[in-house]
Length: 107
Image 1 (cartoon, one colour):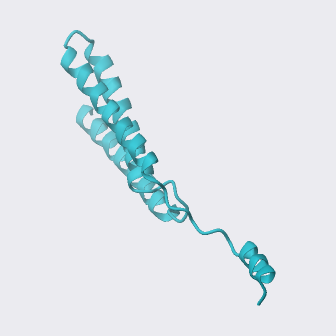
Image 2 (tube, rainbow, N blue to C red):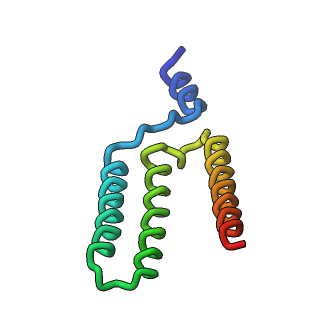
């Protein structure tokens, strides 16, 4: 096999998945720390309306879940369709149960 045919064969092969470097993990870690500090600062301030505190806490918690799933559990990569479907189904079930419990408690 000549070097030209090896080069052509290498070009026809699918490109291998490159491993992520630590840069994205460092950014995700810093983002997680910032979200945690924001939630902590809002709660510790004390002068903020409680409804606003709840909104900020839920918002930072949702962002934190997204960062954890996407970067640390690699759900953003290909081949994770079934775990993502399971997570979404679990979220739907939990929200349904919470709504049913609220309805039952107020009925």
